[in-house]
Image (cartoon, rainbow, N blue to C red):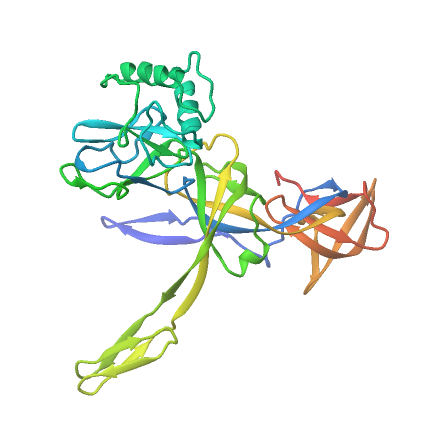
Length: 383
């Protein structure tokens, strides 16, 4: 219907046609949903729960002081120190990183007794390209001394064929500097911390509750959703041995005077003041353990400390029938049915559900007459 309004304009009378308004005879008719079909499959299904973690690096290292002296240089935070590079300088002399699990505890010099530390040193000299004629074993030989000489000449230090304590430091692998304990100009003491680091291998660090630890073990397969939306497979590489308890306490004071509210972990409040009263919020304690997840393949979209989702497996059922979650029609609380499609024939089948894999979008189902290879109705993805 068109509405008409009379408008006076400079003494003249004009007609203005108002915009036609929509007219409804009743409630809107729902649009039909386009459907397609999916196949009932038999496979292993895992139920997953995601935990929020943060991108970072695996490992946590303390780089010790090599000997007494003045710290004269440190690599900037974020620097990756590889085998043969300088970890820091003391009295203007570099302390070189070699790889190995055993710390330096004596000089490397001709005539020294055999030991696993000698083999560790020789392996590094060989891997750095100075091992011509060197046999990697636990014996310090003339070939060992010659390899040391070649290395010392290459790094422009006094060539002696021996390595005194303080010239090298063994760490498990490459060190990505994450923090400084000392600053240049301060005193370095043997064995005391100089700087901190991690490995250079991307990892996800998260805190799992003690309840979740009931179903998390080392080498468990996980799926990590990275900041760019892509997923990568991974494995739980380490679970901390120490639990950390965190608590949240909120306290507010209300009153006519100087009221102060103090809340403890049990959510109790005490008010002190001139007519004041204290109201405390609920205190919550949670005990967590640090878990490290190593990512397989290249971590694209890597942003240090960016939040990611880690999908952990809670339970697994092998050799079960599965359908897309979208195929399930909820008919009542906890009860579902499927629409089986056979050519132009459709029939409803009541099913029981088992595990749900929300990451894969599939659900475990069972029911009378349900079999692998049947077709079920699902909404079209482009609908």
